[in-house]
Image (cartoon, rainbow, N blue to C red; front, side, top):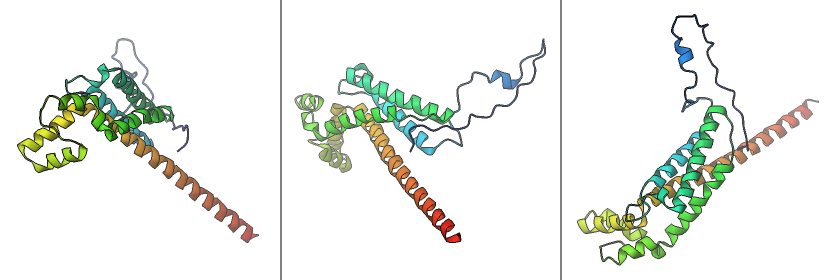
Length: 214
């Protein structure tokens, strides 16, 4: 995956000349319309990163705690929302104009690392500890929450639901989007390395063929 790449600009149909007193043609009305959300000649990587950014944005709009406070209302959530929108914005530009930059993809690794730490040390989470003090039924860990949900009992559903509510469903969705961004980044890096290796092997084979022809 290269640092920047350029796609040819989309072809525009010529506009018909306007005649005084006649309404503007349909093509002229489309001037200034938003760029398309899909281009057949855009790289598939752009759409994958765009989807990851959308999932992260959705997570920032969802509750980050048991009291229902949306993520963007907190300082950390607002920062993550900016990173999410930056990823969406940069991938929108990449899809429409072919201008690809790695900056926002790398910055989106910040919520992934923060979320990973929060998931690992969930017992130390302030929201989990505060909700546990209320005495309401709640799972003890992520594994216990999954087991409780799979039990399909009223108590198990309450334990798993309260655990997710205390941790914040928005933080979970944000982490899923950040995880997708990380996975897509690894896939692009290894895919680019594999493609470069194949190109080098083809070049060596072509050079050997030319030497043999001599």
